Length: 396
Image (cartoon, rainbow, N blue to C red):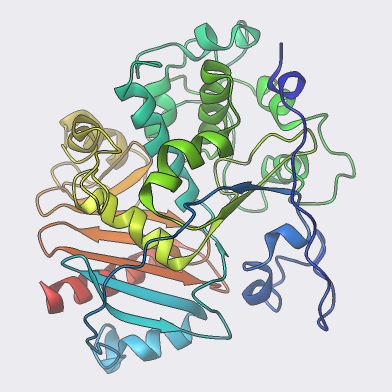
């Protein structure tokens, strides 16, 4: 039985149209519209609610203005960087208190914003919780959990491969590739003209590439497959589990996740959340997996596993061809987190066009940035990393 057979479609009401031209699947990614569309995914993509706590938690505040901190070449300040990169907002937490918050371009603290691939780190945290309670193990075969995948390219892939982006399918993540458009259409992120029957059917038909367990190869479909495994194992919808096991005990407010035509969540990038709630999530990881009340949500072993480098992880990352990958650097990808310096506990959740949560455990700092960059590349990622590191150095 397919996930599409088990669960009915569940979407909230579409938001009322405002005075601006309506956002559509053909126009929402136009750079002239992304500042607005990244805050309003439910207006043009069916979405489900990730229920939050009845009374959301606000972090304490000890203000410190770091707007004038020099973060870039030519004396570029933090304020200038945020303006240049079309940021919606930044929130900086030090020692558990908000020290700096700046919201721009009409964004407000009670709005949600598309997190893009920061969603992966949220979903993998749920996977860590489920591993901790024995629901499944990282070494379990994906096809053992989902028998309908036997005989496909996913046969032989284990859950660990999904978490570390070492699936080894023949699928090109690069924007504009022949693989991305039908995937977007399947998930209702683009017009359904010539769309696959469903996202899950599309994934079943993908061809094998180098095979699992080899080089790091960023393939977002791996996280959507992880969500399929989670739902098949638990018999619950992903957004229900995220609410029950993570978002409500975290003290977060309501979030959203986009759905395909059959109601399946886009786990790899479909979550929209508030900037305060993303900071709570980053702080959960900085503090070792316990919420503000001291209740453990994420197993300590899972966080330790994520932040412990191995030669295999570093080599797999280095062989990917990324300019920042080299053996012995302390940089790698694990459990859907970018580990940037294992020695100091500097790691990040990253999303397309400028969404990020940077955590620096030694400096006791979490930095959340939400943006609408006009272009995304490794140089822009490096700039965002440098900015977060400068803030951590200043505060820590």
